[in-house]
Amino acid sequence: MSKRTDRELVDAAREGDTEAFGVLVRRHQRRIYRLALHLLRDAAEAEDATQETFVRAYGALDRFDGRSEAFTWIYRIAVNLSLNVIRARKPNRKAVSADDPRLEGVLVETRAGSANPLGDSENRELGRALCEGMDLLSDTLRTTLILVGVDGLSHAQAGEVLGCPEGTVAWRVHEARKKLKVFLVERGFAPQGEEGAA
Amino acid sequence: MNDRRSSSDLGSNAEATLGTFPFPERDWESDARAIEARLASARRGSTDALLLAAPLPGEADEPSALSATATPLTNSGVRTQSLAELARRSVEKKQALERQMARESLALAAQQRNQAPHTDALSALTRSNGAAPNGIATSSATASNVRASSVAQERAVHEKAKPFPKVALVLPALALAAAAVLWLKQPAPDPLLSNAVTPPAPSAVAASAAPSVIAREQPAVHDELPRGVDPTTLPEQASPSQEPSNVASANGSAASAPGKVATLKPALRAAPASADAKASDQGLPPDPGLRPADSRGGELPMKPTTGAVQAALGSVMSGARHCVAGDDAASSAVVVFGSDGRVQHVTVSGAAAGKSSAACIEAQLGRARVQPFAASSFSVNATVRPE
Image (cartoon, rainbow over the protein chains, first blue to last red):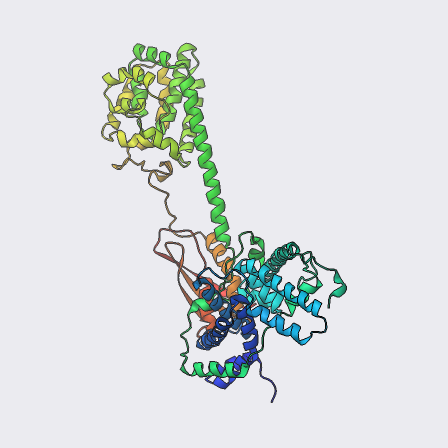
């Protein structure tokens, strides 16, 4: 049996096929979790937001008009839920702490490839600086940068998620990168050439 | 991909870290089961619509052109800039400029009148020919006559000092009267209005309400009070019942004294005195075109103009077309605007009727706006063709 598309899964779920929606969950939960983790900076809240995103998406299946991709539609719900959590928070989470779940991922990665301890350390510092720089961005720029820069969405897809044109997404990404670059330079992470680019 | 090689390039290491930001692995299967367990008790249709709306506002310095020129991607929350809104702003800007110009010209005129050394000459004129100044004063009781009368008074003074043929006086006076009528159609300047209300009895007002005996004492009043009187204050102070007699006396005196001042009579009558004499009890000129713009607020059009409706629908039609993308046939919609300019109701028929795209069309067309109008509602048919 060939792999069903998101659209087919949504249509099946609309007809009451919860298994089809389960496939959709398994297909996208990692990305949704990563998005929520970067937006919320809290693993438990990210887990809750991920669950809530799929439950709310299921509750709104009848309102999915099919003119956008299913995953960008789910992304939008995830972004809205995460922003609601952020707005409901007390403003006490500005600094990037050592137990920041985003850095936890960086630590795991560097531990696995520990042939170059110096490089690992630099990577950890760079990851930390990136997280701090992103936290200084506005919600709009940060969310756009996470969608495009971290999650790899195209500008068109990010535009679908955020409800704005591609040009606006491009401008926001550019602005976010510019500010992030200034921050990194101030922290001693001067941009290197293309020699090390993948 | 994207703009990673742009001037805002973060450098290869940072780009690599950003693009492959790792995150700790979890037991995804148990997470998925937990979600499925919650789905069993989840109720379809219970999700708040706000969660489906476009998140996040635009940045403060975000170029608006990016939003204005782009094609909407989804049927909800896409920012589009309404052409009707642009047109409305343009008209408001123009009106503000016109108000400013009127204000400045009024101030200049008042300043010039104050500087003009004509009060003595006017007193002399009044003493020598009591009927003519009385006629001038009474006919200047109405708003539109203030400018004509003051200019006419100046003319009379000049005429006294240096006589001209009648025709040479009548033509400029007529032109000035016409200019006064045109000027009154412009919005009245607010600051001067408030200033003009404050003095208890501007000269022309006092003269209009007073009998001719008092009017003969007018020169003294002219000397004491500012001459820049805003016309909007006059109808409230001048009694409508008194105006006809005053006008009649003006005519009579002019007839009895067919001298140089009598040549001003056509100009004074050509000015909106006759129209203003029939002013309603509320103190407004009967012809809306002659009313000061700010006296009772602007008049609403009976219904929105075709251009305004087209512009309003045009600004949202692109979004509506997205709703029927892929359809073979066009759909029709009846859009009903309320008197406040907002869409009250949209009825979709045709290919999209009964489908989810009908709600999408309703949402898109429902964002159209026109200027407020007087009628209770206004409906228009719109055809939504697939892209």
